[in-house]
Image (cartoon, rainbow, N blue to C red; front, side, top):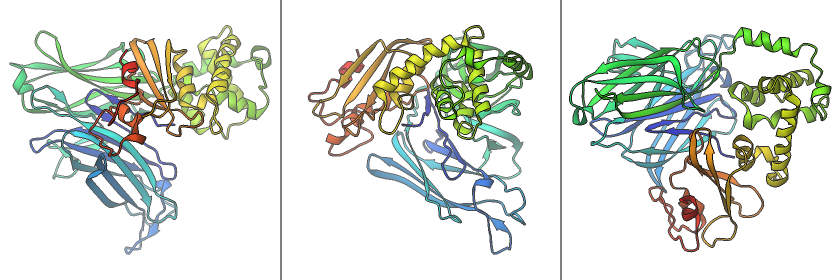
Length: 483
């Protein structure tokens, strides 16, 4: 299955944690008088790399980073370099994390971005990351750059890679804010206001719910600005009392009539479990008899583990962290407590009934979408079905001459969005290994050239700038998608 990345307005955000190394990547695009460019922010967790003695008789880690940007099969830019950690006197010391910032000039276009990271002091294979990046800056429209999250802001004593407009901005290389983080800080740039706005204007930024787009009370700030070709903007907001959940940071330009001229959204997650919530849940768990409320094998560890794993499509951020990092090692008691808490949070009167209804859906996707590799809820189609419910319409194509087998799922409404589509395809042709290729729902994977990829096996020359296939003969994909 494909990783989930968020592409919102003019923001390009991505993060990755590699299997062997704990390396986190984020990036954002910017414009300048010399042309557009991308900034990449890389954070390496010190305890995940090997430190060896160097020529200074100190211990140091070193990783090799290779970044490749391609348009189709043409390599536009290659950036290969070695990144060294700070030195330590002894490996018994705490191994420091280390970060890196790179800038690469790239003209407007759609790029295949590939990156490999290799621990040079380890015999482990290099880890790989890939994504599609779109850069589209204009001289005739008000636009935002990408949003760079900031760990700290200090006046710059000298120019460095971290310096912007007289300040050193240390990147915050994650879009997850744990309980001990009490503020969100960010940097962005606003372009072309001098060409399109007469007089002062306002920049407003606020936090909204990711699921409902409802603005969160008291989380709003604004600043009055004057037009300029490029306006650097730094924002900061206290989130100490922001509850756990999924959110958008929204930044918008508004004129004197309070009309929104442009906005950008940036997805982030917050974990902030309140102690009183924990106590309330502990009270509910007292004397709770799992055997009378839930059917099934709730004492068999393997069965219980599968029951917990199948909850992931409908889990919130904190619940997913337990599933992703703890479920394999959790005891039967821990799995039982997690399972009980999960359903009590959703229905503290009849949690077992809610589970039985969901279990019916899990069984359905297992019968229809299970593969030799994945259970039904682990597949892309199964995950979407469980997360968003039964689609209102499904178009199935298994034998078009120029396309892989594919399905288009149509939802009339998901949360507060109307007319949303999901395109699944089977690049293996045989079997049931369908992958999510594209969706226009916020927060799902976006693939601008999905139609071309759908018929990739018959495209003699793959060009990332082209959106459509070389030949659409016999294909109804675009017609069905646009219905």
